[in-house]
Amino acid sequence: MHQDSAEDLLSFRSLAQWVRAAAQCDIDLAALLDDIGLSGALNDPASSQVARRKIEQLMHRCVELARIRRPDRYFPLALAESFSFEYSSDLEAFIATAPTLRDAAAMLDWLPSFYDPRMRLSLTEFGSQARLTIQFSQDDAHIADNAPFVEMLAAVLARFTRVLMGASHATGHISFRHPAHASSQAYAEALGVPVQHEQPLDAIWFDRSLLDRPLRGALLAIHQASAARLTRQAHALQRARMPAQPSGLAGELTRALLNQPAWLLQDQESVARHLHMSARTLQRRLGGEQTSYSVILDHVRHQLACTWLREQRLSIEDISVQLGFSNRVGFTQAFQRWSGITPAQYRRSGGDKT
Image (cartoon, rainbow, N blue to C red; front, side, top):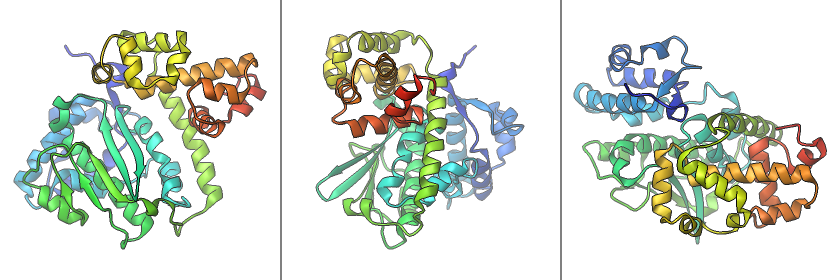
């Protein structure tokens, strides 16, 4: 019998959105949940923990059924249109009151904690363009399995960007690694942007200048208060998922970084070589253990930061440098994301606030 580890269980708090999307596509979701073995989630969706493999099975079954019963509806798009933050008022308030799109982008660090720890969302800027990349910590063999989730997430992010910026500010284009399918044209038309398939990245591309354009709903006090609560919530979820003594390659990498803090100043390729493997192999094997290099790096940096702050031997500037941050500001922002307080506040408290 298959046993799902704690890291392989996901919250099903978004059940209401699945119900709405299924209704749009003439799918009897209750019967489908019962068939897959998820009917128990209907009793208490807010606290239900569901096996990842069953969520994936549910998604693909819904896609198949929608194509038969409502050929004009693509299920991942219906799910995106039904998406809301109704179960997290802090997330909704944080986004709605952001001064700029750049400020709102801080949610990219929190979403994996609330939805799926394998999900990675990153914002990259270059020249006149910006790119929001969607990744899952799995190897390329899972591109097809992840495709409907990637398309749903891209539609959600594009929609929220459009709502924040106004309808006139459209996304430049969207790129996907997976091939086009029967619903690809309808998907692109619904979003109103060009969609390219079989590309190197799953990403949303847009004009970089939009990041710093003032937003109409800006309310700084509410935005900052929501951010403080979200950092604490996300950190609590991260700590709950990270075992005290990780096993496998995750444990080996954690111990190596703790024992060799100088490795924190090196890139992932160099660290992988220390472990006698390529960076690609390292990431693939960590994905198989339901984690990633960035998650472990954050965990180690946080653990060392707390230790060094309590010891009082190093200044906060020196700790920033030794942990691999370019300056104190970057370290302070990361520590607030991990702990909900600044390094200075943690040091003054004697380490009693995380």
